[in-house]
Image 1 (cartoon, rainbow, N blue to C red):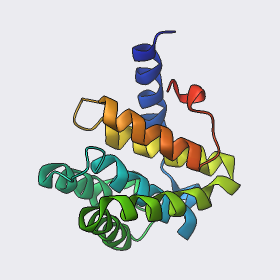
Image 2 (cartoon, helix red, strand yellow):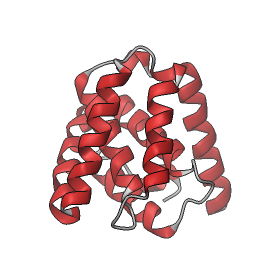
Image 3 (tube, rainbow, N blue to C red):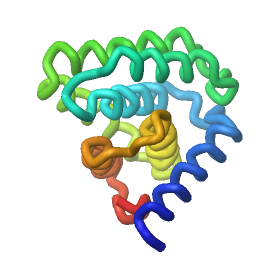
Length: 151
């Protein structure tokens, strides 16, 4: 299977996971890790585009798949993480990778973090090289194999 086919398959898995909802992962570790991953993907090029930030925030607050969470708290958490990488990309990234790594203790939950991040990365229809590189860092932080996700 080629890289693009694997990427499409991974995105489809992420969509399927969001269609099921993430209710079974309704805990602080998943919420923190997934919002940190979303913020890192948004900042993959070293800055966060206002439109991309708004689109992701809208997904977080309007998705019925995240309705078991306090979406206001998720949005606040996402905005806080975006602010950290905007204020100082390098230090913010280090902090967010550490937050993401806490979800590595539960492989199923870690994979769900990756799936949500893939959905966010594909939101603009362009999963570019910088986003792929950040996605690999997220996957490593979760102690998973990037090859499992076609990366």
